Image (cartoon, rainbow, N blue to C red; front, side, top):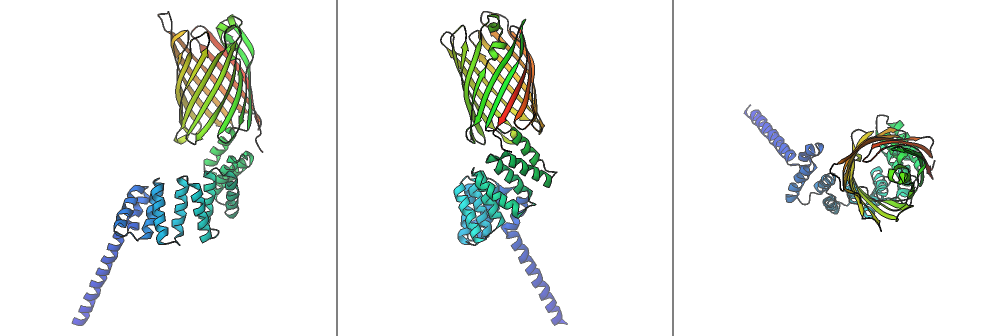
Length: 448
């Protein structure tokens, strides 16, 4: 009996000891300790857990790999590249570390190294889906849209039910200028996952994307005070030169039909402009425009307008700029302005803008404009806004005030032809203005 009792006690002691050892090891395993942090999105804290472990276990290459992923997810791509390199140095066969290294290179915009890393992963594991996917996204992010189209076509063929690859194929086709095929890819993605909003959003953006050539023609009727004028208002030709550069030329005779001083003196005022927009990065872009204003009874005026845009998350942006006018017989005129676009829903945004103007006949002129922009789907757009202003004229004691409002609508008739409508009313500093305009927009060169 004593022997049996001794064996039983020994067994229980051993079992409790083994359980304690296993619990201690589980508590000391950094991969398990960091798992709740990763699930909560606390990547920095998870990286701290891994780093503390590696201080005393520098040869634990599985933790170097885990550290690399945590660093990538928190955006520390240079650190992630180093950690993945350590993991691969210790275990060259670690495919997960190699894939992580490829994405870290891509997110750090080292696209050549990213492509080489994914190619090495494919050499290690031929046909590997994640490596093929990484290579395709690297091509897309680096601007090599032709290669991206080929690779995402391959992925959609191999994995026809994968919604993500269908969206990425649409993006690659769009970037390569194949807007018709891109639309079909987005439509297929929409049918695959009707609950997802991304395909509809991409289709709407595609409808509004600049085509290789656009022609705008406006005509209308204006009433200023007791005077009425009608006819051509504006003609503009714009062309997409590269993915980042768009140029335009414009003829504008709005001054001839909207300016009371010119109308009362039967003076024509025509504006000829050249300009362009350059997209420096996905976050910044610049508009630059130079113009010549020709008046039939005075010297020609030259103007320069520059505008800088900064694009923010959730399709918001802010902007600021300057316009200056130069003439032989008039002081320099200038306008400072700033504003932005603030989306409130997926289809509605407000766009506040402030203008400060210094003209030869004013001490100063302030104007506020608040626009409501509604994107109604399938290319339809409606803008409605209000404006208010005040100015102090030289030699006058009282401040003059301005108020008004406008609507601007855009509607597609067919793929290349769009209709535009505008109505504007201003209770101006000197007289009231009302203007009704109709326009045509031709979008040429867009593939089917």
